[in-house]
Length: 116
Length: 111
Image (cartoon, rainbow over the protein chains, first blue to last red):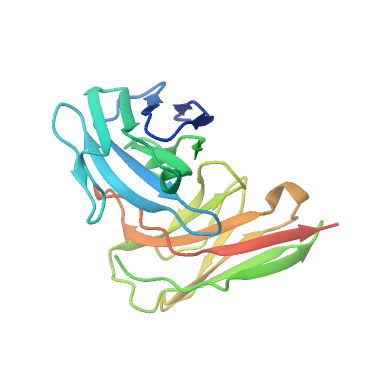
């Protein structure tokens, strides 16, 4: 089945620094990828929709200048958390649409970000 | 997309069947019922989906009531590795938008 690789699986960074998270579709092309954030004991919340070759669409309340999304190819989308603060500590998950996959969506394994 | 209602938590004994209910009373005629699960600190995993007929695959069975207002996901022989949060989602098949996750059901399989 379809595989989405997300890297890194966990990262610890200092306040004020930036962190880049990569999401790759390994055996299919994904024109659309989604970025979610999940706080402890809560459900996944959509942050933005990433479309290859165009600007991402951000959900209400998500700062586009803080969470930079780049989807420059059909197999790679990146999320950069800029000037990270402790409140940005969360579990970030990407998802890619695969029209041939049974469920239609394949998820990465997630990135645990801790800002200290 | 229609809203779903699931119990917040359930327990199941290892080796027994786990039956997870989901209410979706406002489901539209062209909306499918999808089930995903999320094991702790991992991304969600697709389990099964269906429109109105019961479905079975290697992971689970999906029973949808005749009026389609509710469904039940059945894990026939639960193992400790099935401990996870299970999400029931309704959506139009093939639509381009994202998946909207509710709070799901935390299933704890106990030895």
